[in-house]
Length: 374
Image 1 (tube, rainbow, N blue to C red):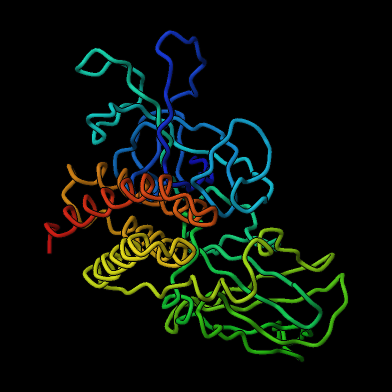
Image 2: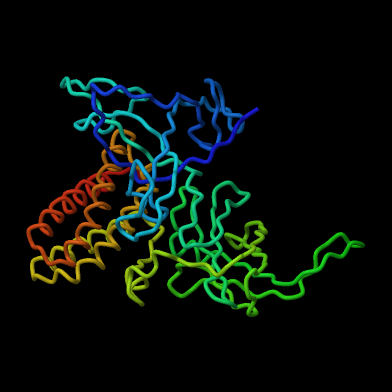
């Protein structure tokens, strides 16, 4: 009988692992490369697809529900948005800094004699923590995740995520549809439920989420979301009970109107994503050259989102280029946050230092994807 564990998605970070330190390692378990929700205590084959299981070590880490690059050893606040950190589970392995493509289930020594470093990798189906103060569900298709919020009486919002709890791009959100049912009755004779009051769920213009205006229900407010993730897909039912209005404790970090300015629609085509990333990199360089440090944050955040979209397309690359490109994406994301922070304080030295890391990461990503398989 197979066991299912929800693993935590996170953009992996490399941390130094002291060679002389005595540590208790998480036990080796076995999971499916195609169905990471499958977890076994012993080597074998996947009960779903019959592929050979692969070894994995699972390690709990405190991270931000929204900014997955944050990794801490104890509870606290996200340094970016001040949300409470949540406990997530990551896959732990070891690698050599000069050979990031290597990946070992056990610690060891690199060819140059130095100790391997531990790193945490993203894994699917793990971060089931609300990102906007709402109620979180995994869909029956075992891939989509969603979060319903009730920010004010009469307003319901639905945020959609992938299997790594990363927000779906705007084009995917706009494919979704559904309705919010606030009143229904059960016909026992026909053994069916009849909707009495329902309001449509429609994507917002920026594609950030779905939204529905309903009757003004004071908490505790009960409602049902019936959702299709794409037109030809099945409809799923999600029951919500809001004991209080939802509070997105990180939303106040950004001024009104800035969130939509930062949002960029992610193309379906990898070549188009790369073109947008290159354009944002040029824009950042021009802003820095002109001393417009306060303008850097917009293209920096958009570049971050484009890079994370490319992370989903690493399978397009030869296997020997995936680890190095993934590491470059991580550095780009980290340096994008630094460009935002240093732009606020106007420190040219720090900005140029962060930009050097950012520009090098862009070059590595461009080089990798320019020679990808067609």
